[in-house]
Length: 375
Image 1 (cartoon, rainbow, N blue to C red):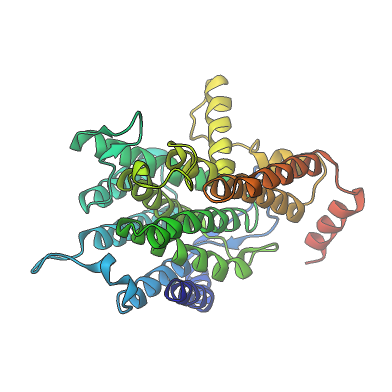
Image 2: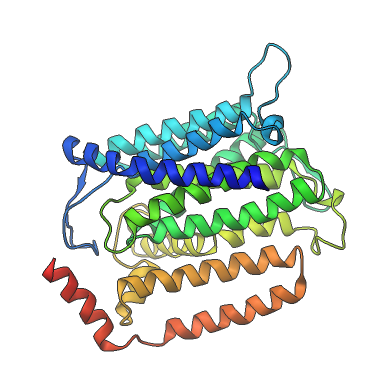
């Protein structure tokens, strides 16, 4: 655990320290988010915060390569390279480059989709792909089917995080919560049950938690910097790679039934930890196609927009969505360990729903708006 915590701390520290440089570069390069009708922010804000997140993740991977426990992640046959790690890093760099171009010049949906498919194909080529699914025992996938499902998971997760990136600190915090839930489950598999294959997602999610925590002070209300597509697609890729590794590379039938209750829990946990962005992207696709519009066409009807319309301030809306994400993710992860705790978390989730339905005091949102005007 100490080595994972060290990687988390390194990612947090490097991200926190490098993000101001990313902000200066964004301003100098002109990668600034102007205020549009569908935006919540009221002043131009630099993008490219994903560069700081990338620096933190790469630093954590570099440190991990020198640690004894992490050595199995980087092991490869003599004369060969660790393709899984290299594939993940290459995919990260591809999406960061696509995101940078989009944050500066703006790309159409098809171009971004092509970049996401390319990144998914790269990590699949590197060995991070689903080879079977835990359905009715073991359902073996052919190589092409495994790659296609892997690419689909990457594209879906990347866009889910991108869709939820609408309020200061929202995507950063939800990604941190999702990564923490992945880390808890993956750590249980890799350490408590000795599954070496689970070590890569454990490392990746520990580093991702650290990177998000290091970026959050710069990004929480009022944000000095947005992560932009550079960051949201990067976060989505790392979460997707962790999902693929957990679902497709670890046999749930090999885990004792006393600890993993449902046989399909490895399939449910990735969905649960991303419940809020998955729900948001699902509603957005349905809403836009129902109106005869493109599913990628932006609007101002996301979950966070609706919560603010109920009277909640931006900060309160973000915290409520944090609560939703943590409750759902925590419930399913706890179900793998202590069912009683899961029941308690379900009760906490019901409380979060009640709190969301309650309108915030009128003065709370007014104070936020006055703060915007004064600044």
